[in-house]
Image (tube, rainbow, N blue to C red):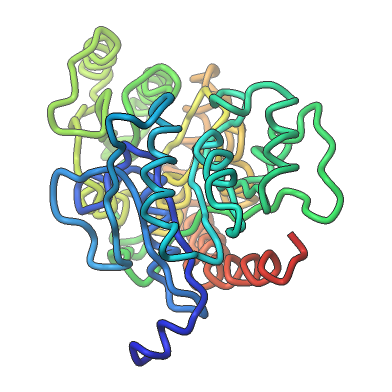
Length: 377
């Protein structure tokens, strides 16, 4: 596409949270999903905006860091909105897509009256400033061009006590994965006899339940081992909290290796080797991107049945309550001791992951954008 043709396309401004990283090694799940979708080819020009960065940004799409001025009023979200609005006013974007910040979205709708502002929710709105009360969520639905959630679970939370406005019901755009960008998954017969946990080592993610289940399962699974990749935070210098120390002690007793933080490419490489990945979250997962990555990497998935996880795993996953280690251990043994069943679950997971592939998600997003710009939103 020539530069002149590209400039003729409608401009979509994608606004990240003010503290979200946007570069290799420092981007969270929200930034990764937004970057994947924004960089996908389609009938729109995209400009990403976010806070100042501590290193180089991704090569695509174009990224513009913005910073509030001393006289900008309000909390961090409102000050971020003021900085974004200054950058966008001369550009006159057709759409402004704000990720995960209700207050920022409403402020931009006021400051940019000529643009249609869309809010993308990646987390439970009932826990977010500017969306906790039914009246707050009703205002978001009424004043914004559209509100989009990454799962039906989050859509139900958004509409808790709120009636959707006529003509612009909240949409669901599931998180996506770029299958073409993943390491090639090994076939079942070449995978390591490895049961893997990936995630933050915090109570909500239930690594302690994983260790307890492994302590029950591993004695009956000769040749198998278990590992935990993760730390309290997504960074190499993550603090060694009391909970982490407790998990480490229990893991040593159970023969589970606690490997600590690994960057995202290393995590994907480990998933491509592991036979089983377990995501035993106690909290209501808004979506469950780790579960999707596990299936797309060719591992059989055991997951908690909470939040949006069943929407991700579908019938491909096995489910076990995170507060019932015996049930989780039973699922581990059922897969690890039956190669045919293990291979079938892995194949079903790969097929399930194709439903969330980037080209499909990008097509859904482009259709939603056209709908909003046509006035239906």
